[in-house]
Amino acid sequence: MVSNALRDADLSYTIHPYTNLVVHETKGPLIAVRGEGVRVFDDKGKDYIEGMAGLWCASLGFSEPRLAAAAARQMAELPFFHMFSHKSHEPGIRLSEELVKRAPVPMARAFFCNSGSEANDTAIKMIWYINNALGRPLKKKIIARKRAYHGVTVASASLTGLPANHRDFDLPIANILHTSSPDYYREGKPGESEEEFAKRCADELEAMILAEDPNTVAAFFAEPIMGAGGVVLPPKGYFEHIQAVLKKYDILLVADEVICGFGRTGQYWGSQTFGLKPDILTCAKALSSAYMPISAVLVTEEVYKPLRDNSGKIGTFGHGYTYSAHPVAAAVALETLAIYDERDILGNVAISGARLQERLRAFGDHPLVGNVRGIGLIGAIELVADKATHGAFPATDAVGPRVVTKAEEAGVILRAMAGDVVAFSPPLIITPEEVDQMMDRFTVALEAVTAEVLG
Image (cartoon, rainbow, N blue to C red):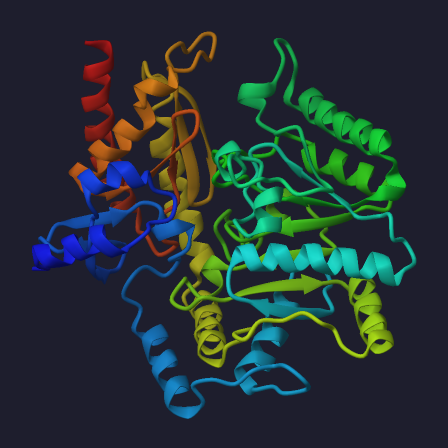
């Protein structure tokens, strides 16, 4: 058992990300000490089904020995080397090759970073760099979407379309714009079909591009499924209409596959599930099952060529990280990709994902549930005060967070997001039986809060 001294040290020395720091001083931390499959255990020995795979990321769970062994082997052989100034190493080379081969559309090269935020930040810099190289110095504006999540660096947090990521950080920076959220449940008009809503979103995007001047708009960033913005699936026809607009005005599409990549949606890439054909693709999280920090940016030949040519003109491609393609992280990522293939992880997503979607949709008639959505092993339940009008609870009621707190007490870790949305994104190795255990624990929590709300 972890002593109270460790809890006190946490409270005395640590700043926690995405945490109410005032509340934390009273509530204190949940200290995880061990992982086993889809479960983690706290310092008191209590087990929790990790219904979010950590932060949408621990795809192979919390005790995969092959990943630990891969890290140990690489640590013993070559614990660090870099890729600056023509240097390289085998894990980085092999991982580049594997990712380019596995890409959802033909890609030319891979560049490595350490997080999804860094990958999206890098994509922004690449976009600005190549437009300068192509003699288009005004084509720099980038459009993301309201409620999007693309990271927390200064540039990637600007892409993120969530108010808490901007407020008091002096964000967004210049040249970052936000168009409509594709949330049909919240944003669709009375009598408007999904297809009509999707077309309206594309029309609004086109209107923004025309208002800004197409010669100044460089790229559009999109998650195949919006993750932290509420697990928002695109409405029917959405990306077909959006991509037609982008093609019309010569605007690059960046697919943020940080959450969706490597099987989460039921196919290897969310881009395959929803028909995206990106010019740039960013990925992270499940790339190494989160066992080591690593992310990647994949680019097409059309993007790579001006990168290459401009570096020749300048004398270098002046961008990179000390830990780009860190050999230990790259070795773990390679082993992760091998496990996905050998164990048919996509096959398990099909089976367990079907069970998750079945259990989620069983809540459709619940008095507090307004909308249920999901695909594969990702989903969400949106809690509402009025099912007929989609009327939300007052934010001060914190209904979603209360359900998540009760769920933690019942032994399942979930995530509450703005709008009282409760998200589910378990490890890709979860079994149907474990899905049932997770949802049974969630049910206990939901019914406890329902009793409080409805009296």
